Image 1: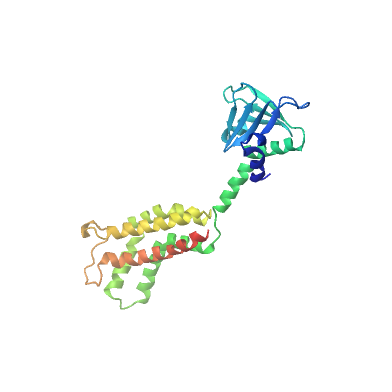
Image 2: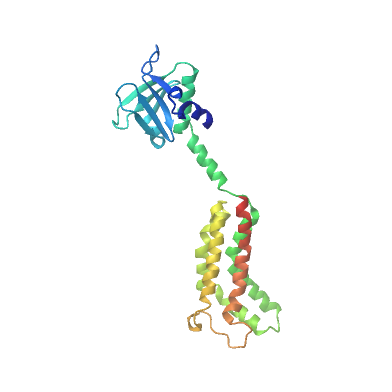
Length: 264
């Protein structure tokens, strides 16, 4: 039963469209009252001076018990433990209404299906996104390996290359790597193993935060930095020679997240 059909039978508050219920399964001549949906609330209006009963959807599973195809038992919200049995019309419309109420309460698995669908929609399937996330995790060790290659193949190196190699040899054991993994590890795991869309947004923001931290630290006094000052004359300060490649290689791939997120 879809939502439109449910609304057609239950949700209108016009008196002629309210669903009658009875206190007897047979000889249903005079209705004992009427029921209808008011947004997320099931309303039971009784004939006479009896107060109406209102049942919120969140409490429907506890308060509504289905006895048969056209009969249900309601627990009174103001008198817990006391239940009244209602019978709907014995024709097909009564069964139709009961099935609609079952779906409204979620007793037929409507809620679990919705949760599974929501979880499915919150996932992505992109091997390139995972590759970018993996690249960001292994970046410190990648640059460490590059330093050994530079040292092996560049014989007559310039001072800038010597500064980069010297700095990155100490980088693997520096606080920068610890901060790197502390910030990126959780969203990266969410991307690599669980395909979570929120991991894309978190990874982009975490990468931006990491670059901002590294950039801000570069303006601290030289005595506060954990790399010794390079004695040779350099084109750029030694801190930026060491960390500019790190920041570029870390942040530029995250722009792919920006391109992927709108397509999810």
